[in-house]
Image (tube, rainbow, N blue to C red; front, side, top):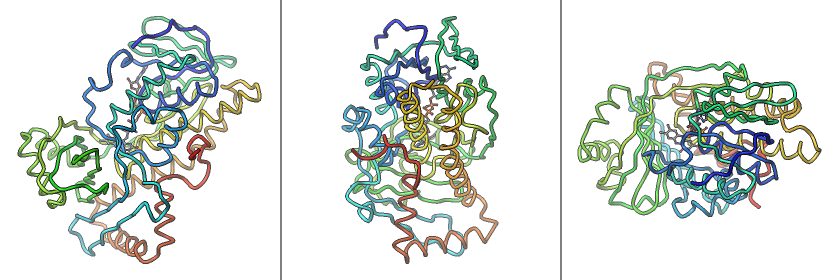
Length: 410
Ligand SMILES: Cc1cc2nc3c(=O)[nH]c(=O)nc-3n(C[C@H](O)[C@H](O)[C@H](O)COP(=O)(O)OP(=O)(O)OC[C@H]3O[C@@H](n4cnc5c(N)ncnc54)[C@H](O)[C@@H]3O)c2cc1C
């Protein structure tokens, strides 16, 4: 990867070049803004990081990637998701019927596409590198940020210093941009660990994604290209440790049993990664001259493919607000921009965080019978009332209001 020599003054500094930060960089540069993005991973091929996650991108996220010109660089690795099944595997009473959601009920598009995370990040980095108004700066890290009244100053560990109008904190759960802006968080831990990998299977997946709800947490299989699926298996930390230590054949055998043989014989399991689960939500999404996007703003358990999709909505929203400010010849880091971003992202982020947390806890806390009754009743209502089912499907894949224009089909 080659890098231009950086200008020490530009419009936007993006701290963190993961999927959220790079998407924001491409979206803002497309609007003509000068962007500098900092990350220690620049200069390395994403695939070398050994990321074993696949990401289920919902349809509006795919429109965003199409609109910023990135999708054509990664669509060859993506698999459409036509059907989503939710299967109650808790064994609790009353039993909850299977919920099946079919994208064709909403129109001709699939719900979204599943893609290996490293392929997505590589495509974004390649696209950003090709844009003349983006500089990707490899660094050991951003060390400090001064949010001043007129500009912000960003300093790297190596001692380079940049003045910008707006800082986008996209530096993950432990965000230093968030800390430097003086934004506090509400955070919590789950006694759960997610194992992520992918595997081959003998029966076709037919573009069906299945979420098994179990007392230790969800187990999700999501179609990939060919006869392969991505896996997210949430377990107690002890059981996750045991599963991580199994050889490939034993792990495949246990997985085959856990998903009730629904994909036939399982073979060829990729490298596995373990992610201890936690939750976090920033108490404000913008302050001073800094806005937070992606994991820097919110961390959710991997249920219902909400995490990065929410992060991409953050990226599209700040790009839209800043582009409009720029058209009015306004400062992209003005108080108006900061307040508008904070206001427009609040409902979406807080409602998703609450819903995903509630769903996860409702699986764990089987001792509270009304929760199981509510889940059973809720699924029956979805089966019986198609308009309700369609509303839930629409809301599950995107918020009903305030979806930025970049996330609509063109
Ligand atoms: C098992 C699993 C499965 C998931 N599946 C899905 C799914 O199907 N769909 C979905 O939408 N989401 C999913 N998610 C969530 C998704 O992975 C995250 O939302 C997403 O990766 C967060 O991206 P990000 O860019 O915000 O943060 P990160 O990927 O954490 O990127 C942050 C970047 O900031 C850089 N950085 C950190 N500190 C500094 C610094 N001081 N200076 C400069 N750079 C810095 C880091 O090097 C890193 O590159 C899943 C998560 C897990 C754990």
